[in-house]
Image 1 (spheres, rainbow, N blue to C red):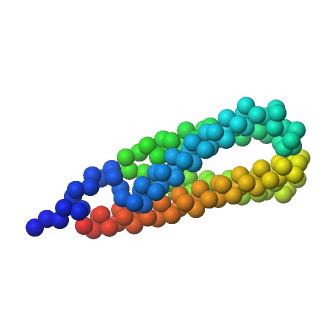
Image 2: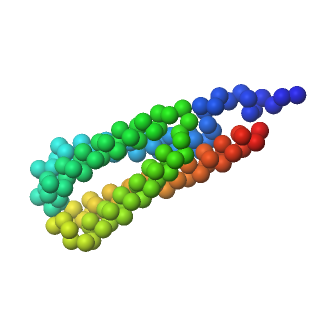
Image 3: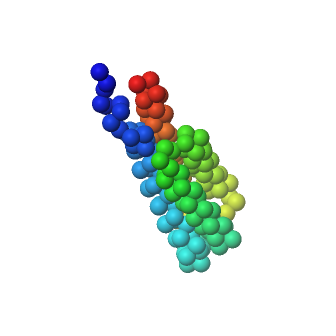
Length: 149
Protein backbone atom coordinates (compact mmCIF):
# COMPACT_ATOMS: atom_id res chain seq x y z
CA UNK A 1 0.00 0.00 0.00
CA UNK A 2 1.42 3.38 -0.94
CA UNK A 3 1.14 6.59 1.00
CA UNK A 4 -0.46 9.53 -0.78
CA UNK A 5 1.15 12.19 1.42
CA UNK A 6 4.71 11.74 0.15
CA UNK A 7 3.88 11.18 -3.51
CA UNK A 8 1.08 13.70 -3.96
CA UNK A 9 3.25 16.77 -3.49
CA UNK A 10 5.37 17.67 -6.50
CA UNK A 11 9.10 18.09 -5.81
CA UNK A 12 8.90 21.82 -6.59
CA UNK A 13 6.51 22.45 -3.69
CA UNK A 14 9.16 21.86 -1.07
CA UNK A 15 6.99 22.21 2.02
CA UNK A 16 6.66 24.84 4.72
CA UNK A 17 10.35 25.63 5.19
CA UNK A 18 10.89 26.11 1.50
CA UNK A 19 7.77 28.26 1.29
CA UNK A 20 9.03 30.45 4.13
CA UNK A 21 12.46 30.74 2.55
CA UNK A 22 11.04 31.61 -0.87
CA UNK A 23 8.65 34.20 0.59
CA UNK A 24 11.35 35.90 2.64
CA UNK A 25 13.76 35.90 -0.31
CA UNK A 26 11.11 37.55 -2.48
CA UNK A 27 10.25 40.18 0.12
CA UNK A 28 13.95 40.79 0.72
CA UNK A 29 14.49 41.14 -3.04
CA UNK A 30 11.67 43.63 -3.55
CA UNK A 31 12.58 45.73 -0.51
CA UNK A 32 16.22 45.70 -1.57
CA UNK A 33 15.20 46.92 -5.04
CA UNK A 34 13.09 49.72 -3.55
CA UNK A 35 15.94 50.69 -1.23
CA UNK A 36 18.36 50.73 -4.17
CA UNK A 37 16.08 53.01 -6.18
CA UNK A 38 15.68 55.33 -3.19
CA UNK A 39 19.46 55.45 -2.73
CA UNK A 40 19.99 56.28 -6.40
CA UNK A 41 17.10 58.68 -6.95
CA UNK A 42 17.47 60.33 -3.57
CA UNK A 43 21.26 60.47 -3.45
CA UNK A 44 21.33 64.26 -3.82
CA UNK A 45 18.31 65.25 -1.72
CA UNK A 46 19.14 62.77 1.07
CA UNK A 47 22.80 63.72 1.24
CA UNK A 48 22.28 66.77 3.47
CA UNK A 49 19.73 65.40 5.95
CA UNK A 50 21.50 62.05 6.35
CA UNK A 51 25.09 63.13 5.90
CA UNK A 52 25.52 60.32 3.38
CA UNK A 53 27.64 61.59 0.49
CA UNK A 54 26.52 60.71 -3.04
CA UNK A 55 29.89 59.00 -3.51
CA UNK A 56 28.60 56.44 -1.02
CA UNK A 57 24.85 56.37 -1.77
CA UNK A 58 25.17 55.82 -5.53
CA UNK A 59 27.40 52.70 -5.24
CA UNK A 60 25.15 51.44 -2.41
CA UNK A 61 22.12 51.91 -4.67
CA UNK A 62 23.74 50.07 -7.57
CA UNK A 63 24.83 47.23 -5.26
CA UNK A 64 21.30 47.01 -3.86
CA UNK A 65 19.81 46.65 -7.35
CA UNK A 66 22.30 43.90 -8.17
CA UNK A 67 21.51 42.16 -4.90
CA UNK A 68 17.79 42.44 -5.57
CA UNK A 69 18.24 40.79 -8.95
CA UNK A 70 20.22 37.95 -7.37
CA UNK A 71 17.57 37.46 -4.68
CA UNK A 72 14.86 37.31 -7.33
CA UNK A 73 16.77 34.71 -9.32
CA UNK A 74 17.41 32.55 -6.25
CA UNK A 75 13.77 32.77 -5.12
CA UNK A 76 12.69 31.70 -8.62
CA UNK A 77 14.40 28.31 -8.56
CA UNK A 78 11.93 25.39 -8.40
CA UNK A 79 14.02 24.11 -5.48
CA UNK A 80 16.18 26.73 -3.81
CA UNK A 81 19.76 25.41 -3.63
CA UNK A 82 20.87 25.40 0.02
CA UNK A 83 24.27 26.88 -0.89
CA UNK A 84 22.56 29.88 -2.53
CA UNK A 85 20.30 30.41 0.47
CA UNK A 86 23.29 30.11 2.81
CA UNK A 87 25.12 32.71 0.71
CA UNK A 88 22.18 35.08 1.11
CA UNK A 89 22.16 34.56 4.87
CA UNK A 90 25.91 35.20 5.05
CA UNK A 91 25.65 38.23 2.76
CA UNK A 92 22.90 39.75 4.88
CA UNK A 93 24.81 39.09 8.08
CA UNK A 94 27.92 40.73 6.62
CA UNK A 95 25.83 43.66 5.38
CA UNK A 96 24.48 44.15 8.89
CA UNK A 97 27.99 44.20 10.34
CA UNK A 98 29.19 46.56 7.59
CA UNK A 99 26.34 48.98 8.25
CA UNK A 100 27.14 48.98 11.96
CA UNK A 101 30.84 49.53 11.31
CA UNK A 102 30.16 52.38 8.88
CA UNK A 103 27.81 53.95 11.41
CA UNK A 104 30.18 53.89 14.37
CA UNK A 105 33.62 54.12 12.72
CA UNK A 106 33.21 57.78 11.68
CA UNK A 107 34.06 56.86 8.09
CA UNK A 108 30.98 58.72 6.85
CA UNK A 109 29.93 62.10 8.32
CA UNK A 110 26.44 60.94 9.26
CA UNK A 111 23.92 63.22 10.91
CA UNK A 112 21.61 62.02 13.70
CA UNK A 113 18.95 60.97 11.18
CA UNK A 114 21.71 59.35 9.10
CA UNK A 115 22.79 57.25 12.08
CA UNK A 116 19.17 56.21 12.68
CA UNK A 117 18.81 55.39 8.96
CA UNK A 118 21.88 53.14 9.03
CA UNK A 119 20.84 51.44 12.28
CA UNK A 120 17.35 50.71 10.95
CA UNK A 121 18.97 49.33 7.79
CA UNK A 122 21.21 47.07 9.88
CA UNK A 123 18.21 45.85 11.87
CA UNK A 124 16.18 45.10 8.75
CA UNK A 125 19.06 43.19 7.17
CA UNK A 126 19.59 41.22 10.39
CA UNK A 127 15.89 40.28 10.49
CA UNK A 128 16.04 39.09 6.88
CA UNK A 129 19.16 37.04 7.65
CA UNK A 130 17.44 35.44 10.63
CA UNK A 131 14.24 34.62 8.77
CA UNK A 132 16.14 33.26 5.77
CA UNK A 133 18.27 31.13 8.10
CA UNK A 134 15.11 29.70 9.70
CA UNK A 135 13.63 29.03 6.26
CA UNK A 136 16.85 27.37 5.12
CA UNK A 137 16.98 25.11 8.18
CA UNK A 138 13.32 24.14 7.77
CA UNK A 139 13.68 23.43 4.06
CA UNK A 140 16.78 21.31 4.68
CA UNK A 141 15.07 19.28 7.39
CA UNK A 142 11.96 18.88 5.19
CA UNK A 143 14.21 17.69 2.36
CA UNK A 144 15.79 15.12 4.65
CA UNK A 145 12.35 13.88 5.69
CA UNK A 146 11.27 13.62 2.03
CA UNK A 147 14.42 11.67 1.16
CA UNK A 148 13.65 9.16 3.91
CA UNK A 149 10.01 8.66 2.80
